[in-house]
Image 1 (cartoon, rainbow, N blue to C red):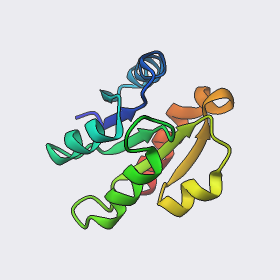
Image 2: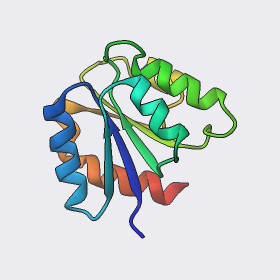
Image 3: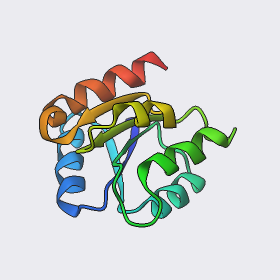
Length: 120
């Protein structure tokens, strides 16, 4: 059974590109376009890993990450932050497992997903 990845970004273009890249490597990909939608989807069934943006309307990626880390039912979810933000410190402080820059690291995403899934 393929690993399930939840991709969260308010940009449909970004989610479509990330979904296509990850599906090429055999991952099952689900999309959410807000922090609220991501938390609702996780409550209905936890993915193996989440790829999360920072800047979204409503609940931002940092807050999504903090809420998941504070919840014992979801605190072990693997999270890769994929963002244009340069604040790596804030991302790791919120509890991400890895941090990638959309503009530079998008091609490396499938490799990093594989690495994070194998580490846990």
